[in-house]
Image (cartoon, rainbow, N blue to C red):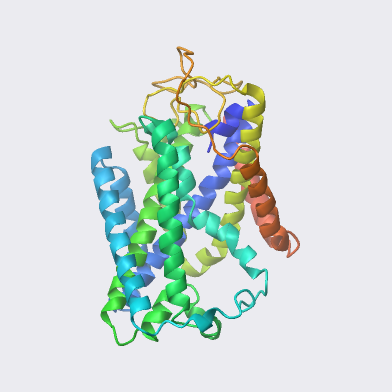
Length: 407
């Protein structure tokens, strides 16, 4: 988030803008997710009114506790959560298709049932990019892998297959049980359509509501855990270069910026205290995420242009900020970037690397991504000034922080 664009452009300001925007989006995403964790648990287990906000705050503290544990504990805990998540999703999918109530006619017409018409699905893509950003997060944690050239491409492919497959089945299973028109008539259920299916078509299976609550809660908790970790690592990289206070770079024995994680959790908790405000921030936060993605795509072109075929090995310090070059990055120290504590920006030996982790797809995939982002945001570009004014204000705050720390 910070090192790759900063090194590619030779400018810590570009890296900071990328990191700042993405971090704001992640903070909003954690807050939004915590609120819906509380909603899922409250609805599924019939908790009393007023429990949502305390549960949302508790979920953030839970994720923070997982993040600051030792790496081996973190891996086991996160793996266990993902395993239970997959099991609960498969139970819901099997019941939906096996209940005899699934109706394929709910998908006709396919594109025009939504309130925004034939191309309305494009408006959902930026939010989906924000919600499924953890797949991209694996690339940002490249230096934590022992053999990134081997493990990261496999991890990305496997995770994509699981995520696309399971969540597509969840959507198809749900919309085959409840019509889009029902969700439009009941807007309170539009954010929790699986519950709409449980309360209507699957009402004869009351236990499935609890399964769905656990599944949805785990899905969001695992997302929150990774977002907290990625955001704190990005801020730690910025602190290594003097843009943020040194407290953000304080790490535990595993090299994790635990102090930064705790600080990142504070605004997440503050935003979660106002659930109605958070929903509005999600659409705005999606823009920050898109800006960071565009910057990193352009940085990819810049890095390839500057050092095509001249890449060297990245360091092996085990830190995201301590020498782990991002995919396709330039293994050199640009102007304005100082060597982090405990490691160098590039590999000191300069030994040619025989196993590089390189972004796949050549120039085709990045160009297609830029075109898709433009098309998906075309409606927002012409829809009003509020989103742009809010975004400009937030980025102005980020630039002021940079200028103050760099003076």
